[in-house]
Amino acid sequence: MKSILALILLASAASAADESAVAPVKAACGPDNARFTVKTLQGQHPAAQPQPGKALVYVVEEYIRPTNELGKPTIRVGLDGSWVGANRSTSYLFFAVDPGEHHLCTDWQAPPTWIGPKVSLTSFTADAGKVYYFRARLVVGGTVLTLDLEPVNRDEAQLLITSSPLSEYRQKK
Image (cartoon, rainbow, N blue to C red; front, side):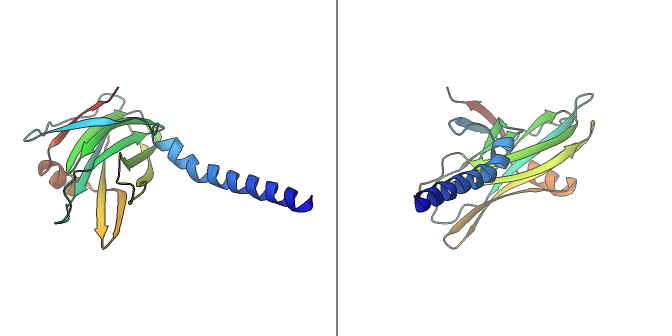
């Protein structure tokens, strides 16, 4: 009886640990079943400015395809628990946010099963009238593939944006 009680307590503790591990993902990303189609618009680089009382966020996907890789990954972008768009291969998107603290997520929409889920998270505090730039980079190292999400400075962001197409995305129904 004591061993059964110990097993139940261990299972409860493991379940609580699993929940606390996914809490940041739930706070930043959107529903797992949401899927996007993405078309890239070559030569499109609109000069967006923040709307009054809002901040502007750019997310650039950078993917340097290994020579043996044929696919073009779609990276979903989430903010505060909802998907706001998606990039495909090397492209970018932008969106307005309210001032305040935000939780940003990128994840590979449908990675091959042998790779497993790829998610990257960060947070930032937005000020009205400011522009924030982030790079989601798929990094391949031998047999390991990671997804990194990091803020980049304005100069680096401008270089990435001008050398990448704009994403036009739609959520699948």
